[in-house]
Length: 136
Image 1: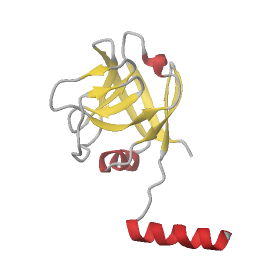
Image 2: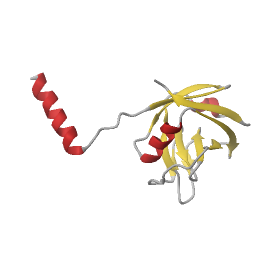
Image 3: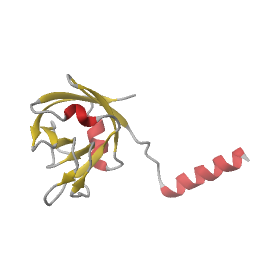
C-alpha cells in the first residue's frame, strides 16, 4: 500500500512539475528575531538567493519598516491589501515588513512572504538594521 501511494505521488509530481518547498528565513535585529515563510513566486526565490542580507530600514507611516535591497527582484503579480506580518516589495528593490494591516495605492505590492512570529517587535518609531538569512 505504501509503495502504491509513493508511486502515485511521484507520478503526480512528474505530471505537474517540481514542487517547491516553502523556504523559511530568519529576520533578526537589535529589537528581536522572527522567522518568516517565503511565498512561492519568482521574486521570493530571487530574494532567497541573495541571503544573507543586512538591510537598514526606516519606519514609514507607522505601519511598516522599509529598506532597499542590493538589487532588483523580478516583477510578479501585485496586490493592494496586506496584513500584519506581510513581507512585501514596493518598487523593484524596496523591501517592506508590515506590522499593521492596510491597503496600498496602485500598482500594489509584490508579496514575498509572511512572518511566522510576533512582528510587533518592529512596531516602534525609528530606524533599525535587520539581517535576513536562511533559517535552516
